[in-house]
Length: 94
Image (cartoon, rainbow, N blue to C red; front, side):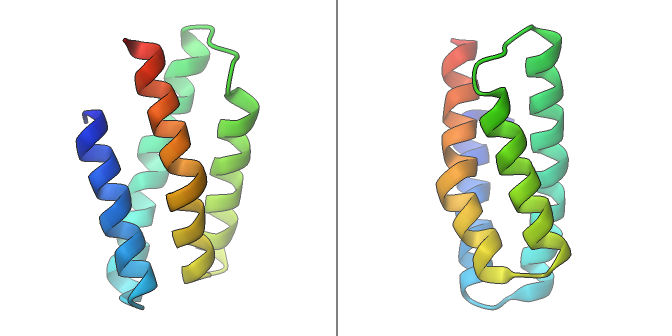
């Protein structure tokens, strides 16, 4: 998935969560969690240590809010930390 598509997916997911479309939002967050886990794994394989602590913190926060079904917490994490993480990953790839 390219950067723009992923950022658009994050925005759409956050919008669903802010609009209390719980089932759609939870399903989308579940998919994003998998994508983020893969991105972090690839970073580790390439030996990219920068941002690793931030990435793990972001993933942990998103997973915790997902498990607690905290819609606003997930939306905030997506719009703040996840967007920064995606931008960082794609910037490193260039």
